[in-house]
Length: 119
Image 1: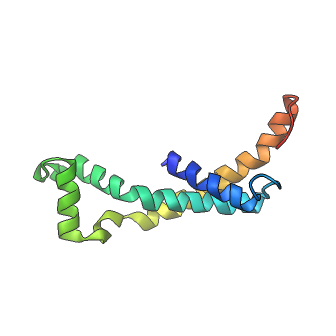
Image 2: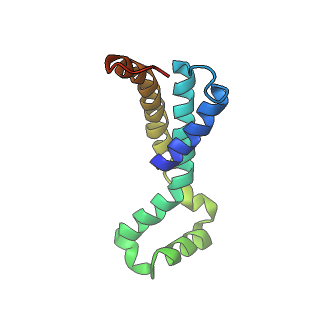
């Protein structure tokens, strides 16, 4: 999850700041963080669905992880891998926006307090 978020945010930050030529604004950082949260949720949900099925009461009907993926796809289609995605998006997207925005607001303050240069 975090790898996907930082991957997205890195590309977004480069795009918004013209590869670091200008500072990112708080609302831009909020939007980028929210996009990163959405990207990671949609990318990781299939793995979470399979993990949940493998840990649940019905886990004995699967021979392993690959079989769980196959049965989910066969029985539910692609939509089966996105079960529960909407509530997760409601939780993750705003949270990641706030986290990335807060980081970008506080980081320069910490750098200045430690005697370094700000970005």
